[in-house]
Length: 311
Image (cartoon, rainbow, N blue to C red; front, side, top):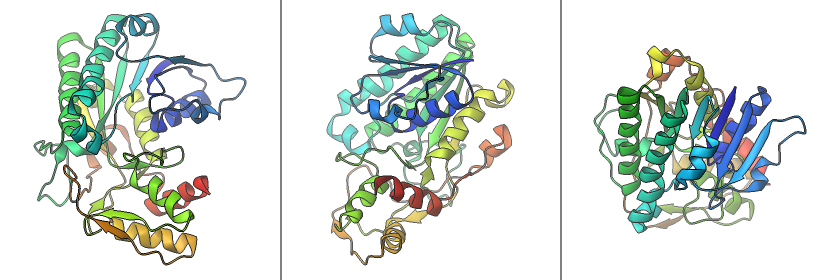
């Protein structure tokens, strides 16, 4: 089995690559290292069949060169940030929507069997529903959310028009080891872990009662592998929530990190950010029914493991 991972030197992509290599798959990573890091591949063993290519999903000729022979494509390459998309809507559109279309065209032309697309829970926006399920109408509140929704529709069209099997995975606040912490757009758990380990107060935009379905990276990796192997009639042309099914407020997260670090740091409050969703909780029953998805690591265990990584 041969797999191409776009953004494979990034946070989630590198974990997918590690899991595939552990299974004995042949893996090709394409990453322009704008966000990814070669250090994220330090787990590589001498016997792993892993090739790293520094390049961009915007390079159509490169995609056409490396795509043939691949059975699976895991399309993780993106600019994954709501605030960045608000600040730079054009640049994020080029990477997120245009880039996805180029990857889909190359996969179609190369006869790839199945493409897994890293979508986002942000496409739901705010909703009065107690949990977000796949039948809810999209309500994008940011350019990033709109780009991910548009990419999902492209994936569905490529399945319908060309027979390319595509599966969209709507990630809910994935966190864990290797997640960047040193950028204004970094994930909140990575930023809180590194800040609080230094005795710094965690920064909260809003009142801290906003809640997220924090999803440890092992769960996202499992969802990708299950999506790749599930029967086509159950998953092709569809999209699924990838989450833990539990909603945790930022104040709860800070309390847990204070306990783990034996501190009593108070949050530093700032005004809410434009484009942020208030609450997020996933219904994961569709993924469970279609491909046997289950939560492998709960949020508390995941936070403890992430904190240990940054110590």
